[in-house]
Image (cartoon, rainbow, N blue to C red; front, side, top):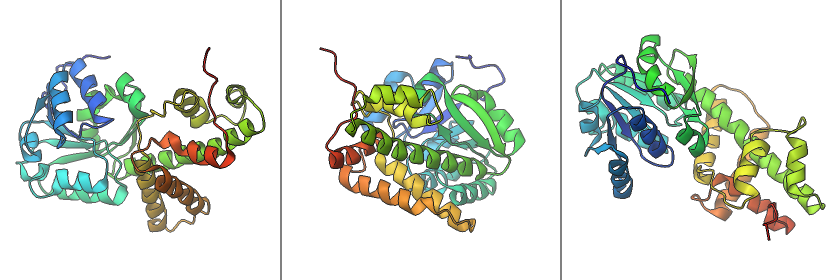
Length: 307
């Protein structure tokens, strides 16, 4: 991990200490940053203190005590409330920066950026991908969009989280990239689940199936990561909730409609994920989508346990 340098922002804040926010906090503290923290969950706040963070009581207080505030929140509504809502970050005097690591969609990101600009607050739209393991290891894909000077300022901080790719200089462009990424992730996991369930039902060892797929043209993020790490073991611990994947797919659908682009696969895919959401519940890990197909086929895609 690269230690913080003398040119890095001196005071960081982070709003949102969930599955992604907590390992991101630990990465930043380990790199030498002093980080103020905000989360409405007392348990998450207590864990942040144990990790070395300092908890504050409101978004406005977080902004007053930070040069750069990172937001890592689950929904567009939560990001809007924390950034530009009553008592939000924008209630504090300007001069600080906001970097949004969340997935909100381009329209919301642009609206937040415009509001903050009127308060003399620079905004970088910078969603991340790579899951909990990637956050903990500093191997996230960081998709930054914003003014070049703003990105330059926060680049050392974002570099602690993973590989930073500047996708554009207008807030919202990072969101476009993130939703495209998550759409393909959803396609890969759904289609790979169908393929692995059929192959297992037909008598193939799923480990052998994955070995062949990952050596050939069928490989994808699900066969290379999700199945080996979370499905074959039955751990289902990728750290991304079913309800969040469904939220991102709806944002992708909205983005396509606003761009007047017809995407015929999208309705079928969303229907499958929504059906899984209803069956499994929103808190289920998104890798559990395979369970829906397993139940119908009366088979489990698991590696045999050692005896």
